[in-house]
Length: 246
Image: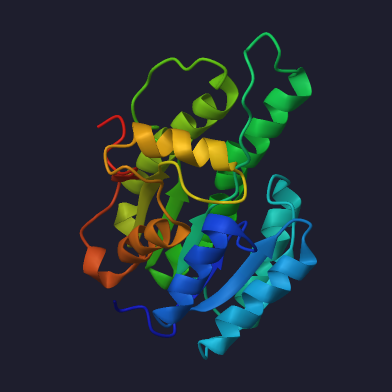
């Protein structure tokens, strides 16, 4: 992939899928801005892995669900690296509750982290990419988030992730003239610390490929969309879910 010496900002990249994305981009030649919220030890470990590939890594402990903080982070990344070629919006905690049991605060928290953070980071990064006349944004959605449908005990998260898809397609249309591509990767059920052994066994039986995905498989899809090999792909949604709900 043609990513050598590009600068990538990956939100929520200290653990799980975000960390795998950051490391894959580094392996393909990118210098990284590693964003995290609270786990400094994990972030430092991620940065060390990136540096072991020979690429640069700078840590940014920032809550991207706050626009002022996200904007300040983007300014610092630009100051440190001189440019931003790739933005991956990966932040997005899950909430499994019925609509009635979801509190007002939980609703706002899910939208702030999953949807508003995408808007905030894009709003801060797009002017830089416009000036460069190039840039790639890949937003992380959820399984089949492009299909508008109802979900039991998953309303807040599903609604926010559907919003990510609509936002991404809209931004792709608006910014194409400025050389900016925008796409979405929808991960399926991926083996992370969020799932118990019982969860993994259950989904292995439900998924057509008979296993959960790995963070690295999501990272491979993101890296492809961020590369010049995907230079004619924009406004697209790529489901990486092992055939589930296809």
